[in-house]
Image 1 (cartoon, rainbow, N blue to C red):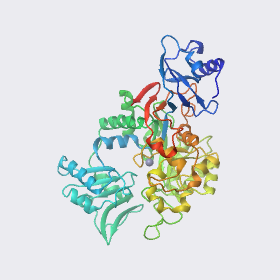
Image 2: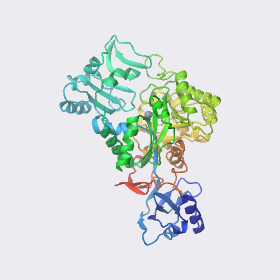
Image 3: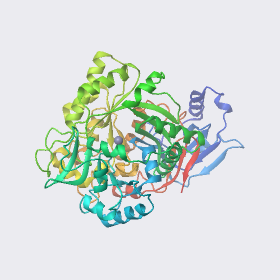
Length: 549
Ligand SMILES: [Zn+2]
C-alpha cells in the first residue's frame, strides 16, 4: 500500500476544486476500512475515501482520510469489503432496452415451449390486430432456433415478432409475414435476408430485410415510456456495478427520455449518447457536437454501421463462416462511400465518429475511412471508435494504433456466446475480442455488453477476458487472456477515455466523480470462474447510493 501524506492529501484536495482552500473542505462522507482498488497507478490500493459535493476529496489510508473528518462528516465502516470505481459499459442500448423491459415479452428462456407459453399469455391480453412482441431471444440458448411454425402454433391470429438479443435478426409468424407483404416470391434486399428451407420462409429475417416488419410494429413508445425505460434500465445496470454507459444508438426520442429521467432524478447512471447518423443534421443545425451536455448526460459520437453481428453470424468476414451452408461471409451494411460521406461532415463538425465493425473486412474498411478522414481534415485526438472491433489481424492492430482508434469490445462474449464460437473456429478466435493484442500494442480497448446482446455485467466480462472460457468450459482464443487488473481497467478507465472523460471518472482519484462500487465478495481475489457469482453490495453515483442490496 502506498500512503499518501497529509500534505499530499491537501494538495490533491486543493487541486481538484477551485472552490475553497482544501483545508476548509470537510468531507460529507468518509468510507473507511475498505480494500480499495483505485485503477490509479499513482496509488493502486487504499483503505479509505473522502467524498464531498459528489466528488472524491481524497483517497488514502484510514488514518489519513479519517483525520479529515469534521463533526458533520458521516463515516461508513466498509468492514473490509472490496471497493472499485464504478464500471462503464462502453457500448449498450440502455433506453431502448429499458422500454422493451417495460412493454415486451422477455424471451431469454431455455425452451421453445416456455417462449410459446409467454407469447400466448401476452397475446391473450393484446387487442386484436395488435402485434405481440418479444425480445432477448437467443437461438443459441434454445435446443433449435424458433420457427415460423412454432410461432404460428403459439399465436395463430395476431402478428408476432421475436427479436434476437443481438438485435440484427427477428423471428416472425405467418401473420407478421402477411402483414408485411412478404411471401415465398419476395427477393432478399441488399444487406438483408429472408431465410428459406426448401423454398419456404422459415420466419427468420436478418438485417436490412427486417425493415418492412420494423415499420409495421405498431407500438410507438411514448415520451413517458422513454423516461421510465431510462430509469428502469439504469437501476438494472447499477445492480451489476455499472455507473456509466454509452448508448450506442441514440435518437432524439431516447435523448429526450434520458433528459426527462435526469430531470426527474431517476437516471441513476451517467450516459454518453451516440446518435444515429440520420438524426445528425438536426443536431448539427442546432450547433451541437460531441461533448455537449454534462457529467450525467452527454452527446457522444455519430453512429454508423459497416456490417452485421457476431452472435447472429452476420459479421463481414474475409474467410467464410464454418459450419454454415455455402460460402457465406456475412453482410456488409453501409458501403465505404456512404460511410465517408456521413463521417466527413461529422468529423469536420467536431463529432467523434463511432462505426459498428465486427468482421475483419469491415474493420479494414472502417480503419481506411478513419485514415482518409485524418488525411483530408487532420484533427488532434479524434478518438475514433471502432464499435465492437471483434476480428482483427496484426496488420489491423497496427493501423488501429497508428490512426488513434479505440476498440469498444464485447467483454463477455467468449463466456456468454461460447456456443457460436465454432462458426469462427479455433484459429480465428485467437484474434477475436483481441484484448491482449490491443493492450500489448498500447491501444486503449474498452469493454462493453451491447445489452441486450449480452448481459451488462462487468464481472462476466472480467471472467470471460481472463479465462476465455465459455459457459460449457470450452476455451476459445487462450492467447488473448489478460490479467484481472487489466480487465478492470478496460471496463473503467478505458471506457471513460473513449468518451473523453478520463479526467472525470474511471479511477478513484482525488478530484474525480464519486462513482464507486462496494462488492459483497472480493472480486480481485475470488477464483476467476466464480466472478459471475460476485454480487454488488452497493453502488454510488456522484456521492449518492444508487443501489443498495
Ligand atoms: Zn450495439
